[in-house]
Amino acid sequence: MNLKDKRIVLTGAAGGMGSILARALLERGAKLAMVDANADALQSLATDLSEDAYPVAADLSSAEGCANAIKACQQHLGQVDMLINLAGLNGFVSFAEQDPAHIEIMMRVNVLAPMLLTRALLPSFLANNSGKIVNVGSVFGSIGFAWFATYSASKFGLRGFSEALRRELANTGVEVSYIAPRAVKTPMNDNAVMKMGEATGMNMDEPDAIVEKIIRAIEQDKKDSYFGFPEALFVRVNALLPRLVDKALAGQNKIAKTFLLK
Ligand SMILES: NC(=O)c1ccc[n+]([C@@H]2O[C@H](COP(=O)([O-])OP(=O)(O)OC[C@H]3O[C@@H](n4cnc5c(N)ncnc54)[C@H](OP(=O)(O)O)[C@@H]3O)[C@@H](O)[C@H]2O)c1
Image (cartoon, rainbow, N blue to C red; front, top):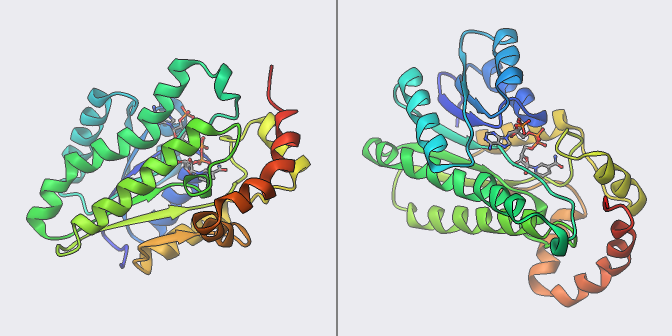
């Protein structure tokens, strides 16, 4: 897909990857409605970017927030050509001790919001017989990681939604793609995660490099993309031989546990 003049709703636009992705999309001639909960960061990003980047401050953790966000995006862009669901929340925590409110908000932002935003735009995509939904998941959406149970569950959900909807829309002009980076150096990963990542030898990519790969995946109309070796291979191994991966991760899980905040 050529991104020139495409009208795109980008969620999580003020975040570590979102701000870089917003710039990269504008460089390719796209017009953006940028959605994020962080109103200050969003406003300063919009000031830095061109008038083709319109800020929409919204909290996507509620159905009302999602509906209002889409309405504001449509009012600004008119017809929307693409939705990129990038907003997300992480949580490195023992599930036995995780605040139930944190579990709920993570599921809302990471999986329910992409579904509701898609639901809001899909009728107009179908009426035009064109449109693209890009869901940014994670390798954790294919391999469940200890101490990231809720995050993994949310990304498994997003991957399942993407796959099912892609099949449902197979005979239409509407495309669905799922993109799964491995760990990336952004503010999403706090100190505890960074230290745990170092101690366990977790590969961590630079956000600019991942954004370039996301853009390429969109331009090449990839249905799904998993970035990084050996993680992309482990995704396949885990699907076929999960007990083997249980054993392979056991040592890493023990080390990771020592970095959980008390
Ligand atoms: N970083 C990684 O290691 C990694 C790896 C694989 C996949 N991913 C995925 O990539 C995506 C982008 O991550 P990132 O690393 O760029 O994270 P980030 O820097 O934390 O950016 C995420 C953005 O989403 C926003 N957001 C959070 N809750 C929201 C809500 N309720 N309503 C609206 N916006 C909300 C955040 O705003 P606030 O700042 O106000 O919270 C933030 O600006 C996420 O879906 C993530 O799961 C990340």
